[in-house]
Image 1 (tube, rainbow, N blue to C red):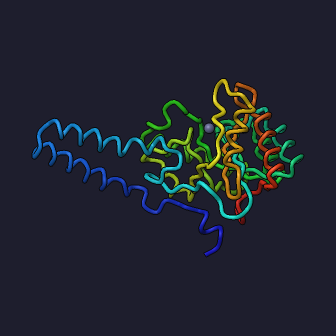
Image 2: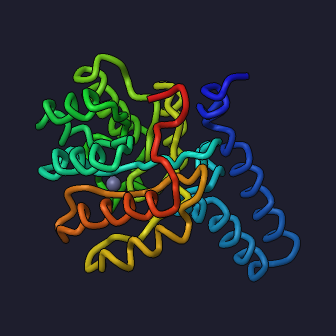
Image 3: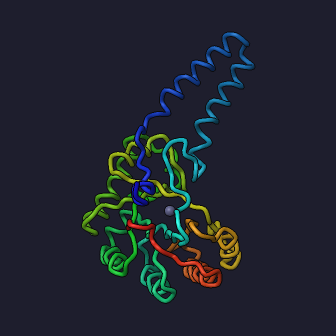
Length: 259
Ligand SMILES: [Zn+2]
C-alpha cells in the first residue's frame, strides 16, 4: 500500500451509525420498561450524549474517519477560512521560510477571488474544501440536504478554478455531524483534523497562540492556522509558527504524493 492510499481515509460506510442509534434507543425503551422512568431517563440522556458529543470533537472518528497526524518527519501546515485579503501576504511569508501549506478554502470566498486560488496553486501549495458558506454557528446542526450542498458546492467551485477537485476536507469549526460522511464518500474526500492548534479566536494574543501551537510541533504534526480573521493577528501567528519550525529544524511540506 502506498503512502497516498493510507492517507486518504474516505468514509466507506457513511450511515454505519444508524443501526447503533436504533439499537441504543431500543435499549432505552427496554431500560425504561424494566427499571422504571428514572433509569429510563438516565439511559435516554446518556444515549443522546453518546451521539451528540462526537460532533464537537474535531478528531473523533465516530461519524467519519479523520486524519490527525501525517507520517514522516515533516509538518503539515493547514490554513483555514481563505481566500482573503491576507492570502498574498501569507504566500510571501511561506515563500520566505521555504514552507508549503494546504489552504482549506470557503467556496463563496474562492468564487469571489478565483485569482487568489490560482496563485496559491501556482506557488506550489494545496487547496482543500472547507464548506461553501462557512455557517459556523449552525454547521453542527445542518441536515443531510444542507450538509451535502455545503460540501458539494465548495467542491464544484474549487474544481472549476483549479481544474481538479480537492481531495481534503475540513469541517467548519471542526464539527462533524452524522451527515458529513455521506458527502465525503460521494466526493472521495478525506477529512482532516489537527494535532496542533493555538485557539486563535476572538481577542487572541499572537505570542500565546504561537506558544500553544509550538508545544505540539513535532514530526507528523498537522497545524491548524487561519487567515483573514477580524482580529488581524493571523499573519503574526503564521510567522511565529514558521519561526518555531525553523528553530526546531522542522520542514513544512504537503503530505507525500498528494496536494
Ligand atoms: Zn473555518
